[in-house]
Length: 193
Image (cartoon, rainbow, N blue to C red; front, side, top):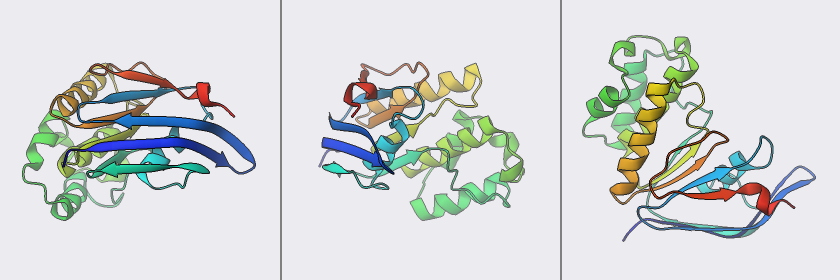
């Protein structure tokens, strides 16, 4: 069965504040969507709802296929060297070719560095390597370009293009421009409550 991600009439409430309502989204293989909006309007909350980590206040989300999430939470042991921290997840995720992600994201020189000493951009690249190694069809990326230099940004955009061209689905929440293949834009302010 092919991957799909569908959100129907989603509303999000954080505390006493209704951030957005009536938001619907349907993604099929090859689709890429950028969720835009200023800080605090619900981009990250929407990504967490799509990932199943946050319940919508109203509406429902359904998906077919594994979901990979990259957000501000690194999910790598900060006390381990990067190589060992990634190996832990490679074993759990059944990764067959971990070297590919390390090469593409230029992480080989950092494999002996404890995760806690990595820069913001290096941590972001490590999170993306973990995502690549999971081999899941649905990617949810929350501010994936934060902390990255120009070359790393281009690499991330190229990885997303390859993923979508291969039948994957990507939803990117970002206030920064992001080159998406045949990408659609969803302005979250259009659904402000």
